[in-house]
Length: 385
Ligand code: SF4
Image (cartoon, rainbow, N blue to C red; front, top):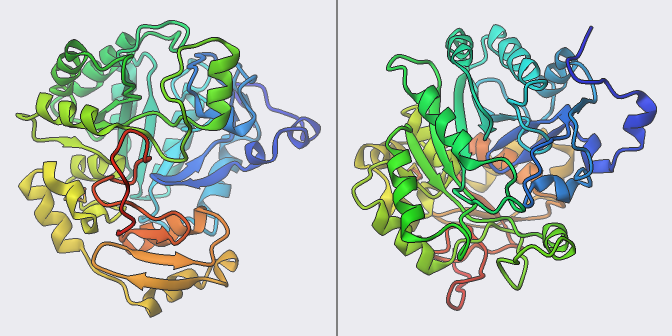
């Protein structure tokens, strides 16, 4: 059994931060597999800061690909054909030259099991014509490539140039017949950094190549803010937040710039689902104001799939999770089920994907018209969804 990147010993793994040792982790857009960790691209806002992994700038493996896939498909959160999966989206770049063979090994293993789950692969790296051929040999998985593009040209914030992702998106979107889908993942949008009218025009032009476009803001968490301060980088906000930040005026300008586009989304899962001709797997349809920019055909798909679960159904689905023993359904409306008793976010995502319906935690109320985003840059909040 070999790995293309160095394989850590048991001792080295024991010394990793606790969250880094968690190779399978549920995140909002899917169950995430991260047995290769470490990245050389050095984006200042990288989520690796929040896992104690920032200093790991060379990829290393915690286990072989075969072991990792076993761990994923046997995980209590994994449901064949249902659970959306993400590969290497938290600790490395899936198309770094040394990581690429691991990415394909995982995809090919999952595909050989005849699984039809969504698989999201987020990249900003250079892709090659060979990648088209190899991805086209996957028969079962619903693969989506999301190309992270920001247009930021401050090398201290993004040392790896954004135009590479733009070229990769164009290359991978070119074949008219392909098995996978492509998304312009336009992020992070930061006021004052990459939101001039010109930036918006360039992103709009680029979006014409993709099957769909998502725009999102910046996860400006405490650890990332500390890094900005320590390295004297221009701080985008005065405060930090647990959700992504897109101020109201910037959102309005993005929507205006894309007024003639029919495939712009606020949510990753919406864009991914749309690109595969399926209803949103996160059940955002309940949050009606999210859907005002969605194509009519997609609205109809999501409307047809929208089922408000009963409290019994929520408890039934949660029964397989030991950590959901204290689950309480506080309220259920057309928009979302509000629950309490879950110590962490991961079981909530499991419920959400199993039911295709929004499940919110009572401790973190979602605000109307805020689309699950942070409060920064928006007028006074209303806790009514
Ligand atoms: S209809 Fe709403 S929930 Fe469905 S994909 Fe569009 S924006 Fe998302």
